[in-house]
Image 1 (spheres, one colour):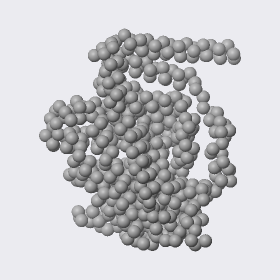
Image 2 (cartoon, one colour):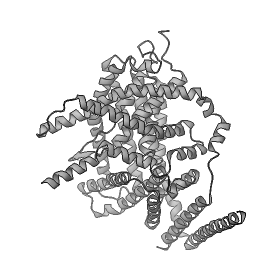
Image 3 (spheres, helix red, strand yellow):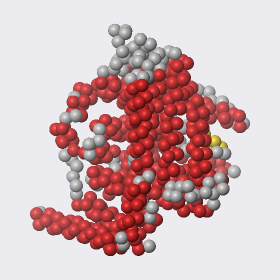
Length: 281
Length: 277
């Protein structure tokens, strides 16, 4: 029994998912609402409460915790607040999942404090690095005539690079490393029985990270990148637009007439419907 | 002096957790009687797909202005909570205004304004469209709409769950936080050093408060999942019959068609103007 892998059954996975989603969702909701304040260009913000999914991923099934955290952030702070940013959210979803999952897999014995610390910091580092790469790519494709604007390319690298360092060193240590080091040993052995599970030990942990995980993460990151660039680039569409703008006003007039006709048609249907209901009564 | 004190007290009051809570709840629950909320989620999602994607690909300023005006009107129709609009403004500025300042710092000049202005217009249009949909629709309806389009059942479950659990979770978090404060002994915060110590102390309390909250939520999520199991949730989630029954309440009405048609007309006129200019 003791040598069995820590394989949760699917309802326990759902429990971990719900738990992480609710907690991390609540935390991101607050961070979304609390304004950050800046001293000079150093931004002091409770950037995120990533320590919650990190701790839970170290104690429970990492994949469920990682997916729960990403979903929680999406649902609570984006959809409930109406801040949903379309395809761009996919990138955050994937980077958070990768960061938390890898951190969770790194820890084989949650009682080993050094390992917990390294994993927590590593998780933040990975997540921020991926986000930073995507951000730079995004601005390069989002602005028209990017290279033509004087001073813009350097400024993007500078702000993004600085934000990355700021997030990793400031938020990473203060809001991820220290709370995780505090919470994991404290929760160990206490929270698992609440979900009906055995605490993770060296013997029951999953195998160390193999090539499969790394390749999987890279593929997922490529997907995130593709989604982000799809949302912001669209060079072929610009060409298409130029064509269509050149072909003149007649097509545009045609579209307007079609649109006006559809409005009239809907109004007519509505009027008829009203008459019918009156007749029917 | 007294009025100033009162004023600062007022502002601090506004920023309390209670205020945040009421704003969030108002946003999620408080506008079920608007026109936008009464519409069919499937139609609104298609609408959002257009206004969330197309502005990114188009660089024509008249067209972008037209789209922006339209989504501004729909946002007004959805009666979005003030705090969300404020966050929207801050978000748009921090995305592009900040970049502009840094561009100036690196020796850029006024020529940087035009592309950045287009970018701002794009960002504003896309985020207002999402504010309209995701804040105007009640989450349950949104979940059903997403499900109709074949989104994973997990996502729509999460939205419905979050919608119901959020008030409970917030209250519990606040209670835990208050009980920590009650037992704690905050450092004096008259001097600057004391203020920093006080801030650190506050942050520490928030972190500590998550410990009991985690245990409580673990217990609750076990109960939730067990109840779901009793009702055969995991079986129902993949069953087509169940999905059909669940989605039978969705209905496309004349209002929806009118909304779509008017939006279409507006966009068409914007395109016409864009070609004329």
